[in-house]
Every structure is written in C-alpha cells, then in structure tokens.
Image (cartoon, rainbow, N blue to C red; front, side, top):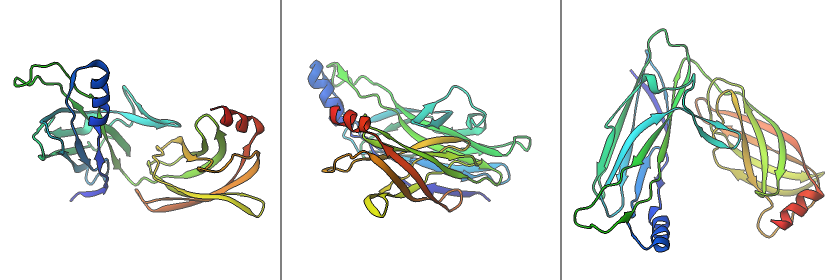
Length: 279
C-alpha cells in the first residue's frame, strides 16, 4: 500500500571529545553521550495520501540518554542548512510521529515511527521537515557534582513527495574561494523534487589534465541552488593563476536516477593566489 525508500546512513556523535575539552576548561565534570541514528535522510512517496517511515536511535555511550523529538521546516541555501519558521513545503501539519521523547539506556535502540497524511485538497508537491533529537539535561542523584552536557541537536531530513515529481539540475558556474580553499560549483535545481547529486570532476588547461576527484552527495533543494564545494588545491600542490576548464558529471539516484554532464570555465586570479598564501 505504501511505497517507501531510504537513503541509509549511520551517524555517530563524538560528544566525549568536545565535552571533555569543555570540562577541562571550566573544571567541572562532563558527561559524554554517544548516539547512533539511522537513516539520516528519509525520502518517501505518498500513496493514496499517506506515507510511513521510521528512524532508529541507538545509545552507544555509557550513560542513559534522554532526548525530545520535534520537527521544524527547513531549506538549503547556497551555503547549507537553514531552519525556517514557516514554509509552503512544511510537512509539519501533515506529520505525526511517536514517541516524542526518548529515554535510552546504554546499548538500547528505540524506533520513532512517522506517518504523513494528506487530504485530497492538499496540492501535489514535495513536503519536508527536519526531525530533531534535542538532548535533555537531567540531574543524576548519585552524582550531585555539577555537570556539563553537550547539547547538540541531531537532525534527520524527511522528504515526502505527493505526486509525480522530478529534479532538474543545471551547473551554472564555477568560482574560487581562497579563504575556504574551495572551488564553488553553483548548481541550480529548477525541478519539483530535491535530490542529492554526487560528482566526478576534472580540472584541465588545454589538453593538460591538472587534477581529478570525486564529491560525495550534496543536497540541492527543489526550486533553489547550492554550491557544490571542491577542496582545492590538493595537499602538496600549489595554486597557479590562470583560466581552466572544470568538467565532469553529476549523478543522483532519487527520486529517479539521473546524470548531468558539465563543462564550465574556472578563473583563478593572482589575487586568489595571494589571498591563499596569506591564509
């Protein structure tokens, strides 16, 4: 009855490293917590106005873990994630999930189940939320010493598509950011569905190949654009001013498989080199 697809991913929050550093600075006891979440990205297609999914949370730390689960609308702009107060694509009005609070003992796993329901009058489109697990501070009666707990929200992106939707990607331009030591590949998605392309890329000058590489998945929201970032130059290589060609292929697998070949000019100026050398 329901069609469901996941982009599975595992995530481990190394809270102990950061919390330990905080505790060392302020002289209080830190309580590290480790949480594994799967999947980190959920994508479902509504069938007859309904879609179901689930997320697993596993406590792989040594202490009990307590968190509040809530949802809020979001988007991705050119530079990354942006939480929103409201959005036409907000899934929140149509989404129910349970439980809304987790208490996990060490090595325990809990499942949060999600259910999206759309009335026939709801327009076709992509609806999305970020599902957050927000750690809750608790006082341990056995340890009255003041504690510092790292309060880091874990986010799971949830996409539910109502209707026949597809992305439409175009690579618009490539620029260089010497402060971040990155090539910024501006990619526009004018389609009705968000997708997460991978990339194979090559930098060349005339017939000479300068560098090659691959990029992991980057979310490009429907109706928006995003910088795909390529670290450059590689370790041990110098940045040389000049005009280059940046070519390659984008590949994505949801909601439908697709590819896009691109070939755009890339100019690296003397000022870029000087700025990089100063950083």
